[in-house]
Amino acid sequence: MRDRLARFTQAAGDCVPDATATAVLLLVVLAAVALVLGNGAAATSDAFYRGLWMLLAFSMQMTLLLVLSAVLSTTTLFRTIVLNLARLPRTRGQVVLVAVALNASLSYLYWGLGLALGPLIAVHFARAAQERGIAIDFPCLLATIFAASAVWQFGLSSTPALMAATPGHFLEATTGILPLSTTIWAPASILMVVAYALAVALAGHLMMPRTGRPISQFPDSGALAAAPDAATAVAIAARGFSAWTERTQLFPLLLAAALAGWLFHHFVTLRAGLDLNSMITALLLGALLLQRNLAAFSHALRSTVQSCWQILILYQVYGGIAGMLQYTNVGETFARYFAELSSPMTFPLLTAVAGALVSLFVPSSGGQWIIQGFVTTESASALGISAQHGLLALGVGDEIGNLVSPFWIVVAASIARIDFRAIFGYCLIYAALWFAIGVGVFTFVPIGG
Image (tube, rainbow, N blue to C red; front, side):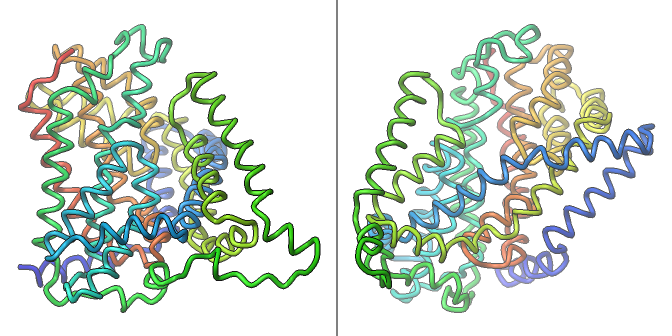
């Protein structure tokens, strides 16, 4: 069985195009659908142009998130913590369980933590396992840890849930304020998070090839685990005052103090929540303090910047795709079609399917809720179902796109320095697992509201 699954994942990876090619294919398909649905060529083109650069700020945020987390991973503190945890398991099953539990916990706290640090956890756990003679297939472990991060969908950084709980949100006139106790902290949501994380750990253990590909077969990935602390590895060629500015801790401390002040202002003065900008600021603050001087920090930046090369153009193409979905009638038509087919029993299933289709084109949970939230909640109301039910069922579909679209897989694979196609097949299996558990939970477990 494991051999057949390994062959399937290999075949799936061989079939999927390059990430940018996949985005272009999605763009062509969506443009054709828009024309069929009555959008003129000029309107379709305009929608593409309006969306082309709308993810530009997001692209830079993701670039900083990836690079700074990689810089942080080279520090002694991060390596010590992860390596100590990686040495705890005694069997292959324990390796998978501890790694999944670690990344699922980080992802539940904030989705960016799981996305940025999960691949590095996989690298260190795979390296420690190989050193102890535990057979671990690195692509399978990486895909399993990446899949575990899906729990963020019902975690503390769930964008739709946070939006719906905020006074003045765009659907307040329709749904009112939806407290977090009735969405991400509802019993059904908590059951979903726990059941899925355990299922991922079990599936990862069962699917792991007996004679897999150890991390030593991926030298670029292995270098992440073997790299010494940048602070002790950098030779400074400059002399005099120039060398002092590179060696001293004064300048990192000054910048760190300014960043700490911004975080205090953000969280305490403004009472704002954790978002991408505050997450990036915290990563930069940690990297500066732990790298100790500018020479080490700059060296770490140079050695880790390669992790973000592919998203620089890819995300702009996805922006054009999202623009065509938002500024034509395609997104609304998809959502309305599935809503009209729903009954109280099939509502979670069809809402999740509709969400999965849209999520392939809109790689943003918040953006998808803006597009589909009104139709979803109106359909739920017509069927006598709570708005919370619609929000949670749509979250199941939204995560399908995150698990199968190259948009996010490329990010995880780039951090780990591995071709995303090596893990794509496993991600398809985990997407099916997520979908089955999610539809089952939100169909049969009562949701308040």
